[in-house]
View 1 (cartoon, rainbow, N blue to C red):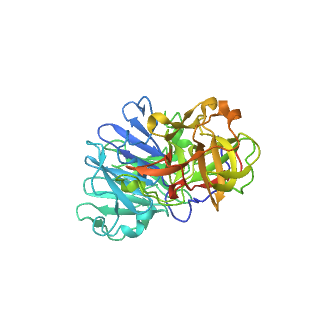
View 2 (view 1 turned 90 degrees about the vertical axis):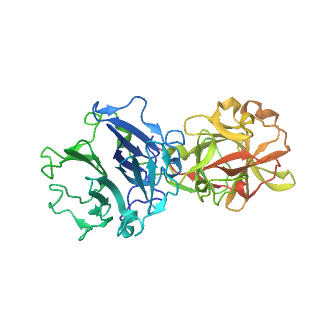
View 3 (view 1 turned 135 degrees about the horizontal axis):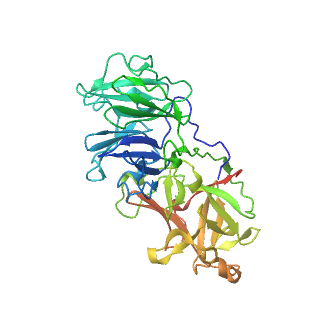
Amino acid sequence: MLWALCFFFHLGGGLAYAGEAVFSGLGTSVYFFKDGMYLRYQKGNNRPDRGYPRAITNESWPGLSPFKDDITAAMRLGAEALFFLSDGRYLKYNLNDARVVEGYPRAVSNENWLGLAPYAKQISAAIRYNTAYAYFFLSDGRYILYDLEKDRISDGYPRFFDNSEWNGLSVSKEHIQAMFSWSDDKIYCFLSDYKYLRFDRNNRAIDPEYPQTITSDSWPGLKFWLQERSTIDVKPWDGKPIEGGTFVVFRLPRRMLGPITTGPNSQSNELYLTTDPFFAAASKNIESHNIFTLYPIEKKQEEGLQNNHPGVYQKVIIQGYQGKFVGVSQAHGGLLRVDRQRDDATVFILDQTWGENVVLHVYQRNYTWKNRSSIPLLSRYLSTYFYSYGDHTYGSINPEGAPTAGSLLEMYVVMDKK
């Protein structure tokens, strides 16, 4: 599906695209990251391993999932992958132990990357060229030579391409998305206009038959890399009754605190709800998986007194982007899961009496779509709320019934869908 263009995250102004990176892993593997997905590509077979692409989760990349939308570049140093993030931080990932190295992410600073800090938010690609040097490519068309032995930027950098080091490589409107080694002799360079180049280390020049276009023929299995970054045009909900199938996006407006010891990555503001398959706050940017569809039980709002709280309500069911509906999972302690068929979808009460925010309630008897006609006019409900558990923020019902600070949500309506 192609969504209408526009939203909060304009990617111009010298900033690197977040969520995209490539690096050569251990052995013959090359890893491609894009928009929360990754693909493991085999050099010898010239195609990805079976079953890819896959989602970046805590199971596939333990500890990396909270940063999947922020990755702008990656490279490997020994048994560690370095991931550079859009906010100027970086993290080390131990590929043998499959974990983020303790103490990371850290800010790029003179204590760890001497001279690189002013350009940290512009890094769009990185590569370890040899044992002595690494290159960083910036979104403004310049590049940096970093001396790994002296641990500092080499004199005279950053600079623009002038055929002195990367003969034949120039960047104008497009920028370098990824740079990765394919062999001892060859390096591939992916550009933002879906062209790619092959660089010969011995000649220090681009091979003459390049650039070429990234296609399913030239790079079998890399279709997900070619998908356009979706952007979404939304506006705040105006409070009018929901009619038919209405596409909406929910966002937590504040920092969440957990009922138990929580991980630092869960303590984030302004995360968008998605399907995890739990109803979870996990995205910093809006993509298609953040869009839900509201179906009203009745095309009207009710005014009344429920749980001693006067307000305006509307009964709805909520469908995720893959077609499943949201329901209360008693087997998971009241957590909200996006795994139901329509008949078993939990009926929610959309409560618009909280200023610019909304709250979702469920009936204490957990009415579903198939028994919606038996819902009484006044019936006791339980409020939902979002809390942090480890590095995740989940939606659940509040057993005490009343709304909390974690119940408040911002709701936006998708203005167009094509």
